[in-house]
Image (cartoon, rainbow, N blue to C red):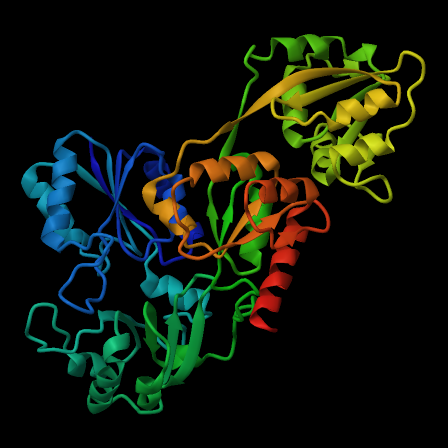
Length: 507
């Protein structure tokens, strides 16, 4: 097997390369740095070994609780797993070969005879200024760029920086890991001839939703109050008059970590809405969708007799997918009316060229629940029949209510809701520190409680539920519900969370 040195990019998980994502999904072992976005670890298969080797700024001689290791120990760890024939991903912030000590790790692997490869990453030296709207080179302003670390010791020592030479070189200067020494760096650059009024931009947590930018001048750099990690850009490009069209201001959920518990194929819209609001999203699939125990034989048989029914009732997008997956000829639905719960189920039908005749939750047609659909259903004609493809965990509310209206209801199991495999340990650690957890069905509530059983959250997260049925399940599970969305949509859940957070902070 091979050890892969993979660049995770500058902070935004969306800037990980496709090749990097592929290798994370294949890895037997992932060895990662401190500043890796935790959502990247959700790409790792559940049985992989995940090791945090982040070297943190030392406040004492003690190691960080998560397992800080000296570089030599990291090298030994990579060699150990490489020799064992495992696929190893060494996940490093930015690009492994740009101040990431990736060269030292590659050298150690080479000496040990371990096959290795590199997957370049988007370097923070260029990506962070770019996202802030700062081109490090610009015609007529700067034709060169120098990238340097914030070391201010003896320039002849190992890792030393000749600030006099850099100060005289001109062009754009990008300084990484320089916040602790920014005042001394500014003094040395001015002593080397850089003007005190040289524009400077300091970008904290660049490319992430927590990004903050402060523009200043070289003589005032020491007074900038931002923290690490930060990129310092020195030169006229830092103060060009154009800015990105996207606002620099953080969203209303900036600084918050929100857990999305939906199944992987359903998490997209909610995750996207939360990210748009500024949240850091951790996708924690607690449930998965599996075929019925009989492999779908009963469902396929019911689908082949679809024209025998007056109505087909769907209460979820999963039911639509399962039913349409075994329907051999859409003409079997001729004359059959379609009923759906909520806009998402309606949209799933529409994506297949089918128009729902009755949608609970649309306009004044009942609540967007199975009970709401039953309430909106017409009275049954003599011998009227309804086919209800359902989850293995579906409640009996719909069937009971329809039978009370005179309908003959045939229920058929379309899919099973099963617990997903537990996530990698570091992902669960992040979940226990999350500010909010979202639930979109009773099954996600119950599976989340089982998955986190025995774990103690470090803070009580806000609990956000998509509607009354899910909120009821959360309360029954012993959770305190903070947000119950006004309608069953991702947008309503996010709106509710934003409003609740604003009330908590007194804004």
